Image 1: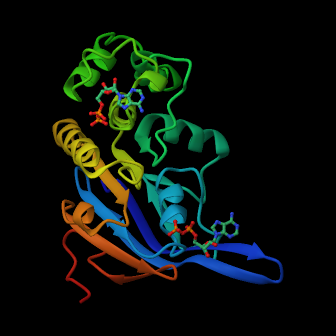
Image 2: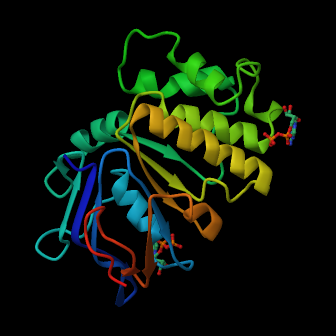
Amino acid sequence: GDVLRLERARRTYRRGEAPVAALDGIDLVVRPGEWVAIVGPSGCGKSTLLNIASGVDRPDPPPTGGRAILCGVDLAAATERELVHLRRTAVGVVFQAFHLVPNLTALENVELPLALAGERGDPGRARELLERVGLGARLNHHPGELSGGEEQRVAVARALVHRPRLVVADEPTGNLDSASGALVLDVLDELRRTEGAALLMATHDDAVAARADRTVRIVDGRIVDGRTSADAEPTH
Ligand code: ADP
Ligand code: ADP
């Protein structure tokens, strides 16, 4: 089935008296293995969308929130416990600021999601992924001993180690120079292809978005441009 399906999804923040619709009726379908880029100005709702896509947040409650189905789970109906399980097994996340654990080695950082997902076996998995992102010689380095580009490649390996169906990436190259950023995109693309994961990525950078299978543009919480699913007609 679909990795993510949003139907008229709405997410409202209360700010004093005036509610703000950070997402104002979003229709979006992400299919297995697809790379979808989300672009739009600061404050348009990208982070809110990614938070729902990673099971960290939910749309407004029924009847106004629409529907959000993540890997078959209806977020409105799921218990907090079910959401925790979904986040740990079905989703991998890459942040702009890397967010590695500083006192763990690169290898230990990549192994962390396996422990959280309760996975046994496959002891070589984390090491293999670090080798595939070009860090086979950095397994026992701590994040402080790595360059930014290296840290983000560790984060990419960490995001895929537990075989998630969806990788959510929020400006993954935003803190990197263009050469390091291009390398991070290369390894992210290579891993999501070979692992068969879908990738939902927010970016300000049109050159980054151009590498995706399709791009969805959001303004003021609404999709203004782009196909809402792989087989829909373009809206422009
Ligand atoms: P983007 O990631 O595209 O910059 P966000 O999803 O962070 O956009 O924000 C969308 C809108 O929701 C903005 O108007 C923002 O100010 C508002 N918003 C985001 N998070 C909160 C929050 N926790 N409380 C109140 N308003 C918020
Ligand atoms: P990348 O292109 O992956 O960011 P660089 O070419 O910038 O890598 O860095 C190459 C090497 O220099 C790294 O292996 C790392 O050991 C070292 N290095 C670079 N930047 C830093 C830094 N900020 N702190 C510590 N070491 C660094």
